[in-house]
Image (cartoon, rainbow, N blue to C red; front, side, top):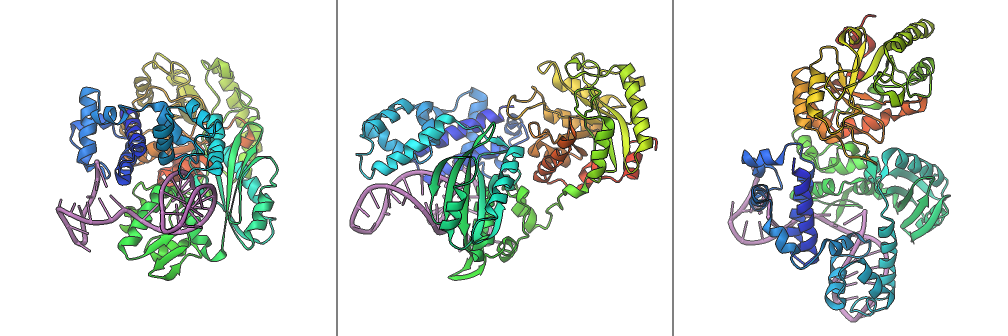
Length: 571
DNA sequence: GCCGTTTTCGGCCCGACTGTTTTCAGTCG
């Protein structure tokens, strides 16, 4: 698939045109196209061949032609043109905070700045500060931006961000005059990674709240500290990240929460719709002329526009507004819908806790069943089980089962899909398992699509685990044709996993939604290696909700008896 | 560059903050 490649090109064109002072909305059109293509699950080459590109909202004649040109010739004139006299190094500088296209252009024209080194030079020798409408403070802010740019902070995994935001919120709740507080931004939308943490606060005397905020433990730098806004860098064991706080009046808290939750694209959609209705939406409220008709609550804001209060996870401008208008928004799955966890490891392979400990922890979570899925023998690095150890484990499961009431412990395994396409246990063993979870742990570049398809065809395999094998912070997924795999899964009625391990989240939101649309059922599993990991379920739920999944789309929402019937498990 | 139950032309979300100015440009979210 060349989707990603083409998305990158349009992003690059947008940057270049912006730098050159091209009409703002043209730049926007390229950016929008880049995002749409990036999120596309269909192969863009196929869409081009079938002449279906223009059916995608946001892709018109011009962009479609350029895509076709690139796919047939390997080149895009518009890109070459846009980049003819500038370089990627230069455009990268647009990512420096407080340095926008206008200022960069100024530095380029007047001071010959071509890259970061040049930029630093003209800052150091004062020549940038001497330019028209520039000054010391502006240049100072750009310098701060360069500092952050050079640290090139990676986005933070959702679990870390959530943990930190909860600590910050606990701390802030003691701030003087504070009445309401919420995490907003991508964290509230449960995106898989978070750039910075945005906290929204309602309260009187913003200055005092901000003063209290910047004294937060772990702060290594104060980036801004005013009456309505504060911004700090904090350092934890492994991560450095930015935390922003905004203070608004109680009466516009709902409008502000709606606004700061985003996404930006969702907000643009909402505001356009408001405009069509003769209304105006801002972070202060919904206005009809000068009259404010909503703003105190988020629900009120949406209601004023004739819309339901969207779950934050839906607010990505992926068709949610249209769906709401047509009254076909999904009733999203909730955390409490989950009745069991279908992937976890114990001391038998690379887990930390015993079967009994895992089972007891699951009972505490209110689950009715769990599947013990230690690794199979070929996963020797993880202490994978051979047939002898597997049988031994089943004996222990039976013993624990007798001892514990209120939970069904399923005899299962995370069976390796071997390089030759076979499974790591013979069918006669697989047949005896309550649940068979199959996945790839080796030969990431060897025929992955075909191997997974073969596994899907095995009559004893129930679930394909972490189908793309990506690790968010470390590696891209296998070289896999996911669409083909999903088609196969749909054909053979196999379940695809949403792995809730925060570094995996695999399938991701986009592909999980596609799977649902193809009629595939999903399982949300934690892949826990210790009892605390069982709490990762909330991140899997986050992905599922972002994927528009409902309770009925996820097999481990079934109560025990129905679950057992579905999988033909002996009670 | 995209788009159309008012439009094939003329719109395209909205406001705060900052720093530079003396009326506003640039950047951000």
